[in-house]
Image 1 (cartoon, rainbow, N blue to C red):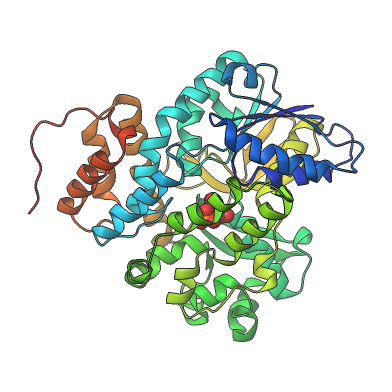
Image 2 (cartoon, rainbow, N blue to C red):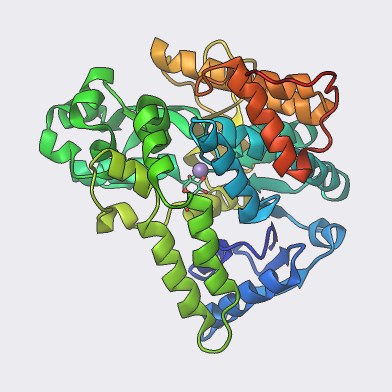
Length: 452
Ligand code: G6P
Ligand code: MN
C-alpha cells in the first residue's frame, strides 16, 4: 500500500515512519512518498528515515518529490501536514495577537484565525487536486488548525477527509494511567471541536470512573491536565477539558505568561529545529531525536508555569499519540478492522445546534467505509456555548478564504470569544495583513479602519 505525505519535510514525519516500521501486519504501507516544496527539508528528513530503516528488512520504501500531481496520483492514503508560511508565519500569528493583548497561540483565538486564513487557500487547492487525481484516496488531515482545515477540505472531499489530533487520546491515556486502568479498555466520552473538547466520562465495564477521579485530589494532580486546571476547577465543571481550554479558562494568566516570555513558542521551535535542519555530519536520527525531546519537554511550558503545574512527568511525555492515531485510522479503513477513535469529522447532529456538515471532534466508528460520528451525550451549556461561538468563527474564516471577503475575516476576529473588542479585531486584521503576504487575497477594504 502506498502512502503520500504532504509536508514530507516536516519535523514530525519520522514519528509516522517509525509507526510504519513497527507495523509488520498484512496490508501494511510498503511505499511512502514524501512531498514538500522545500528540497532541503525533505532531504534532512529523508536522512533520518534512512537511519530508522537500517536493519529493518521490510522497511517501507521512501521516495521524494516536489511535484504535487505526481505525489497524489495513485495514492491510497494521503497525510496532509503542511505549514503554510513555515514557523516564521507561526511567530507572526503568536506575536501580533500578544501585542494586542490577546491570546497568541497557533490554533486558538486570533492566532488560530490568522493561521487558518493563511492556510485555507493552500488546503483548498490540495483538496481540489486530490479530488481530481485520486478521488478514491482517503485524506488524513494533520494540518492545523485541524478542525477548521478539515471542514474546509470536506467541501471537495466529503467524508474522505478525516482530521486527527493527538490531544484527546493523550488526555485519555493520562487519565487511564491516573486511574490505573488499561487505556485500550476504556470508553472515553469526549466531545467538542478540535482543541476545544471535554472528557465527560471514562467508562469501564459499564461504570463511569470519572466521578471517583474527580473526588481524588492525589490522582487528579498526578497528570498534566489535572495540574493545569486544578482539582477544584475540574470538580466545579464535572469534566476534564482538553489542555487547550487553558487559554479560555485562564485567559489573563496565559496571556501574561506568554507576554512575559522572552520569545513565542514558534520562535523557540525555529531555534530548536534550525539546529536539526542545518545539521551536517554525525547521526541525523540522533540530532532529530534530541530536538524532538526538547520540543516535547517544553510543550505548553508557559501555561504550566502560569498554573504552577511544574514540569512534565515521564507519563505526560509518553509519545505514541499523533502517529498512532493516524496509523490506527489508516489500518481500520484499509483492512476493515473496526475501531473507535476520536476524530474530526462532519458531525451529522452529534453536537446539538451545529449543522450536519460542521466538523466536530467526537468518538467515531471506523471501518472500510470510513469514519462515522457516534452519538454522544449533550454538552453542558457552558461548553456548548463556546463550541457554537468558535464554530461560527471557523465558518467565517472558511467564508473569507473561499470568497476573499475581508468582512468575513473581520467578523471571525471580532466574534471570537477570546477577542474582547471590535476595535482590537480591526487592528489585528490590519496588523496580520501587513505582516503576512499570504493574506493578500482578502478584498473589500473600503476605508481606513483605525479604532483609536
Ligand atoms: C499537540 C497538538 C498539535 C500540535 C502539537 C505540537 O500535539 O494537538 O495540534 O501541533 O501539540 O505543538 P508544538 O507547540 O510543539 O508545535
Ligand atoms: Mn492537535
